Length: 192
Image 1 (cartoon, rainbow, N blue to C red):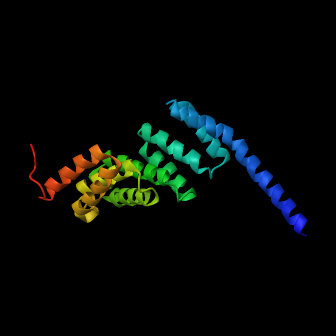
Image 2: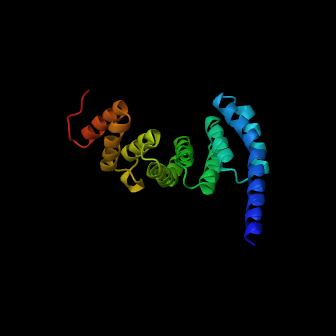
Image 3: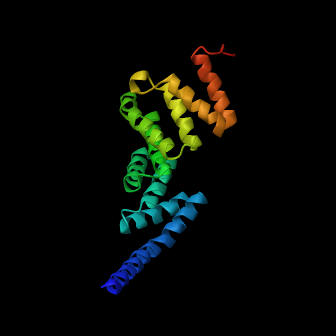
């Protein structure tokens, strides 16, 4: 009985790994093309990979990134959201979703900004909870807290906290934000 269990386990492992190997070279090529900024070619491959393997979080993530670059924010949100659903523990997927919501809000009407604000904040907060050293997410979160109205989650004290952390991670950017926030909070006189 024990021998049969280990044989079945080996067969399952071989089948699972062969499915991964099948998708992997094509996905790897799409990622290489993305890195080379050949987005149209990468997009075609990623769409094929997703058609064959709809639960490939990495393919959804990269396709979301491409749609962000193409300014197709609805599709960017769709694919980044799918990547998050498939791998909830990956900071980059949450950051992709937060950026997608942010760009959609930035280019959309005011009423849409109000709807998307909590989603942006949640995605960025989740990113930094998964990766406390994620500089871009902390920058985005700091700006969100500085700019959003309080009713939508804006909070200068929270922005100040993020900026203090950024001073350690990205000193120049962190100090500049910290000074701006301190001036807004009345901690130091504003400089002109």
